[in-house]
Length: 318
Image (cartoon, rainbow, N blue to C red; front, top):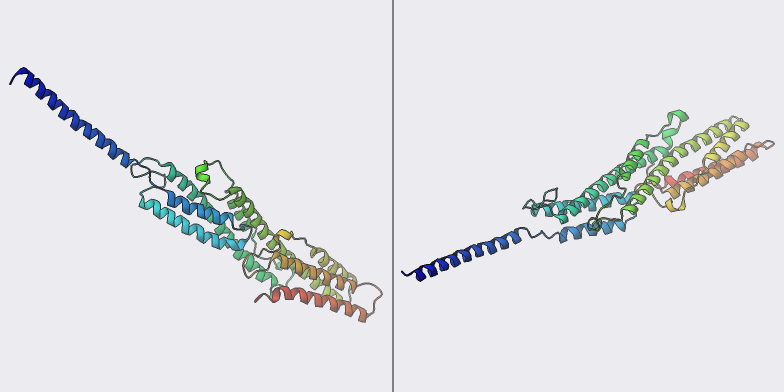
């Protein structure tokens, strides 16, 4: 073989080698590109956005909405987590290639928010049950008949209301990128309306305590009246009238803690009737009246008291 032929053969071999190496490099680049192609999170994002819309369109001031939203959140969280698991995305947002994914990170941040919200709604639902139980105890005449005012303490719910308030406080909006925010409801509105829900619970609890105080003052007045202690009876009836002078914000009157409980508007109606009853009874204690006149006014007061009781007695087995 001549020197020229040897040189040509060497060049050809180099070309073949470079060709093979080049092919390997191209193939390697193609495989790497396929491996690092980010997962498609459009379905998970869509589910979270739908949940956000549901929450935004729900009146979170209403305790009765808690159960429905809890169910929606639980279903969405389970579905999204299942989908992420199928794509081998761990809670840190890493992909199968161990490369953190921005999309997965946004989704996991959103899931953290919804889990906290679910916990708050769970606290609210538990509190609703306690407030309803107190209401039944409050409106059941047997609960306070024959007992002194000091012995008629209702089950305490202040700690539960405080716990609910603290849970609501965790939803104070923090700085998050738009890519995460688009997966969440209006967090300012959520926080504001949950705070308003807390006000609904507190108002129901206050009305229950006040109801017993009004009843005790009326019963004390009636007892004194029957013993002809008209001055003492008049003072008791006036105390009942003062305690029954409550004001409830019109924006809260339609809210009840459960489907079986009274609305705050019902409480407003009840106390209005008790004020009228107390006023009639106090009038029966004025000086210079005949026994017949006193009886007429006290009977009118008792009829109004019974009318007030019918507002809640007709609602269920109190």
